[in-house]
Length: 112
Length: 114
Image (cartoon, rainbow over all chains, first blue to last red):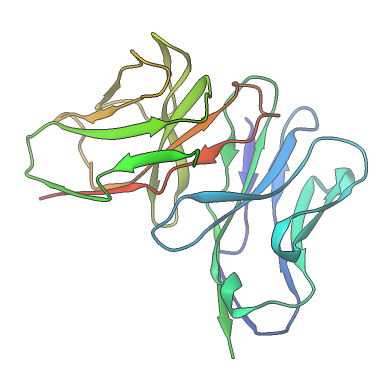
């Protein structure tokens, strides 16, 4: 069965520190990969996406993600976290015309 | 401004009552979606629609119904058959069903049933 896993439920980082959020998927073929961010009580906003080509993709707000086929992973990174990055982050995967499958999310807290 | 509108932001109902959540988009998108979000559960797909007058069940359609009479509108009815309706509901839309199309999300409606 197709699935996407975000192993970390909650991560706390200090402002200015680097960040990596993990995402692993299980699909028969390489899926399309997405990262979304959700501020409390709000909808989701697309950070970045990977379809093909360069395995390191740049997104908005200084985020980037790296696709690693051998590890079935698509981890999200940011070199220096800002307090405004505190939110919930969702990895999503899909193929063809089938609906996206979302991970359960990772909540990011940022401390001073 | 183009976007997706969900109203109301907060909704309270008594158990046993049906309730309809509104979703309107002016992005000229063909596809629309309803998700349910519970703490620690991520987003789960309730229904989706590729085109007017057509919709498909998602993973958790039981106790819900939808209609798609207009391209811009995709209301969701939470029926009394839904055993645990209290949740945050998100509507989204995209140009098409293909995953290459970005989904745009509304601000959500928090439904509380007591």
